[in-house]
Amino acid sequence: MNPPTPAPRRGFVRWLIRLGAALGVLLLLLALVIASGWAYLNPEVRRETGLVYGSRHGKELTFDVLRPAKTNGLGVVVMVSGGWKSEAGSFPVPLAAPLLRRGYTVFPIYHVSQPESTIREVFADMSRGVRRVRSDAAKYGIDPDRIGVTGGSAGGHLSLMLATAGGPGNPTATDPVDRASSAVQAVAIFYPVTDLLDLGDSTENLRDGGPPKSFVKAFRPDPDGPKEWKEIGRSLSPLHLLSPNRPPTLIHHGDADTLVPLDQSRRYVERARGLGNRVELVVHPGGKHGWPTMILDLIRFADWFDTHLAEAPRNGAER
Image (cartoon, rainbow, N blue to C red):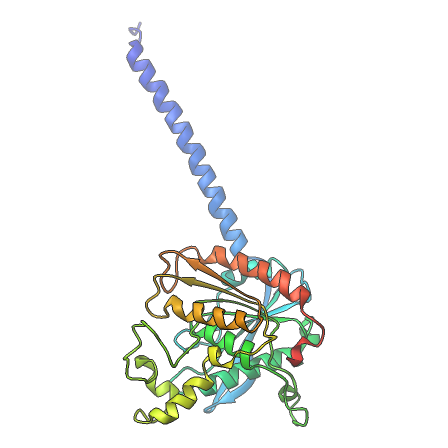
């Protein structure tokens, strides 16, 4: 017969059993959270890639279409651009999950990267991309008068360019795409460049009155043409293109961003509101040029589109 287990040892064994059970429950919960997160970020979607909307420098310009299982009849275009560089087919579905789960059809649009394309050419091409989406709205089951736009950094800049400079197409154009409007009806973006003539404390500012130091060739071919730059910089600065009746705009920006300082968004918001426009700025304390919880901000973007695309007037594409 074995001697009885001492009481202290029996207590320790029971503690180990309880600890093991607790750890097992925690691991199960963690697995469920991870599985739920993965499922949320990978909704059922039908994707078409490589749809051609034009050409530039002998290269095709393309966009994708992401259609959720159940659509709400509204579309959001994504300006796929970072540092005004873009790679066809590169947009990941998880970044559109909050929109897709609300029923939005999402259109990532790509361009030829700078410096092969100038920023003026990039904006012209992305405008044509929006025109193409609108001209084919019936095909994709969306309302042509209620199209939103989103992007970050250079993509945010291009989104604001559409918001401030987008508008009716050429009614006499032979190409039906060119007859469509490039206007958007709601904007939700991250840390956009808004004023190229005043870069403030940006690490891109050489304080010589010229363009961002890493993008000289992207803005103008002649680096010694300050007069030409003033005209180009102004024409590509949403801050200087603002007017009344611009679409409702939501901006998320970090206060520790040294590439595109928060001041870019603050000055844009001040001027836009002064003209009677609806603009909201959300400041992320400690946020740099991107932060870990941005996927949660995309849920806020979806809320913004839910509210403001629903409110968009008919024929809003003519703005």
